[in-house]
Amino acid sequence: MLSSSLLFALLLLLVLLGTKRAFSKKRRLPPSPPKLPLLGHLLQLGSLPHRSLSALSEKHGPLMLLHFGHVPTLVVSSADMAEEVMRTHDTSFASRPDLKPVRTILYDTHDVGFAPFGDYWRHTRKLCTIHLLSGKRVKSYRALRQEEVAFMMQKISRASLSSTSGFIDMSKVINSFVTDIVGRVVSGTSFRAADRCQLFSKLIDDNGVAFRELCVGELFPSLGFLDGILGLNPTAKKVAKEWDVALNEMIQDHVERLNRDEVQERDFVDELLDVVDKPEKDFCLTMKQMKAILWDMFSAGVEASFTALEWAMAELVRHPETLKKLQDEVRGLAAGKDMVKEDETHDMVYLKAVLKEVLRVHPPTPLLLPRESIEDCQIQGYHIPKKTRVLINAWAISRDPKHWDAPEEFRPERFMSSDLDFKGKNFDFTPFGSGRRICPGMQLAVATLEVALANLVHQFDWELPLGMTRDEFDMTESPGLTARKKEPLHLVAKPWGQIPLE
Ligand code: HEM
Image (tube, rainbow, N blue to C red; front, side, top):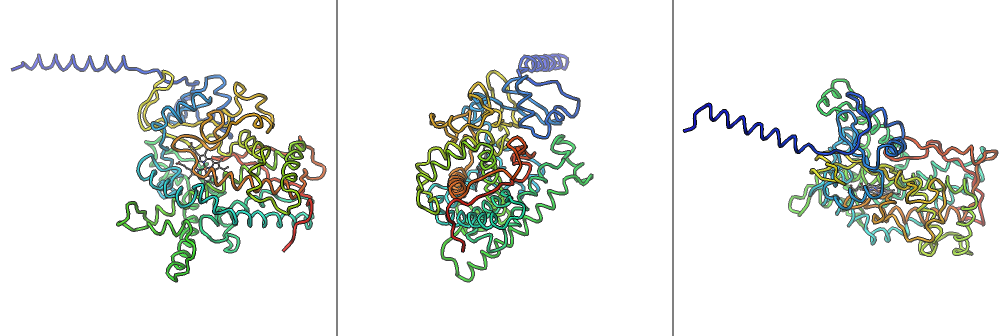
């Protein structure tokens, strides 16, 4: 039998050994700029975080550990480090953080984009790919896209004739075009006809406001209960309610159609309904989960595509020589036709280069979507603890002067002599992300953007509003998850050739 004093001595030795091991295990963390007590680096974020984080990383390196309140956040600002996160350690970083406003709006993150890494995410992502976003599906929406493009052309044509101000609000035009395309592919019916365009555009705008709202629990997880007591984050609750009403109404329409046996072609909502509350299926959803997925398709689908097309038109009017070169290509290959058909865009190499350059200079989600590590890991000798949030600054990376010649210049020619693309293999150019979490809507987005842009430059000549110079044209970004153009895009459109009016 061991005496109690011997037992005590042994215990003490074990504790000391443990402490020594803990000290010797003290791991090297990535560099971190000086921070304030409590707030950490919060005040260094600025209103356009991709820009302020880029400036910080110039001083502190491409891998920085910041603290927003108590939350550790790894900021990645070079192609090499992005490759470490999105390829070498892709699985370790394949989850998303649990963000309070997102949770409130997104039915406890039962969508795809913010779902934690795991089986639910895998199943729902597959469901969206098979029934909505696969190459085959995207091709099948071709006629629908062509109709919506034609409608947009007529709208611009009419507006250019009737405008009293002399210019058109192209932000509005592009927004309703993209909302209607996404609305139609997801719900099978024209959003325009069902008067849903405006409502969904507004709801998507409101998401941005709600996501920017202050949450104490976001920064100091242990004080999250204060959000409820102080009544913080009221917009998220209001927006969540409005989304719920709109989605319920759309789902109800589909249920009634199914009950009346009126469905000829099944759309995405029908496909989802097919697995709602069906425990006998391999994978089934609740109604709440279905709504989260629909939210994702509308919000992710509309917001980023709209932002990209708006920036494309803004850059083209600021660069008349690029616009002219693009028009020469498009008008040459679609000579004698009223409209450019999707097949005809395949050979439009300059069109593709312009689109890439737009996504390089203005990646719609400049910090991609935030990720979170699900296990400890090592990057370049630095220890990254489990549950560290990760922001990949795609905006800074696609302007890194080490990889890009004259990165601030809008110059689509840079892509003419290279096969660099945005499909997730080139880590200096990842507007759609990369790895397991890469954007599943890339093919739908590119198909929509190419045919829309081709027709916009084919059918119209574009100018800045009368009297405005290129330098006066506002190119400021607005804050948010997506970096939209802050001011509405006002342009003068002059019809080229004749567009038949209905
Ligand atoms: C120009 C248009 C678009 C851009 C630039 C874009 C960009 C992105 C980016 C950067 C991510 C995060 C990737 C990552 O974490 O590595 C993402 C995720 C996502 N995008 Fe897109 N996107 C676009 C259009 C679309 C469309 C049209 C849809 C669907 C209708 C869509 C659906 C999604 C979804 C569901 C996710 C979450 C994927 C996941 O977490 O597994 N996106 N997108």
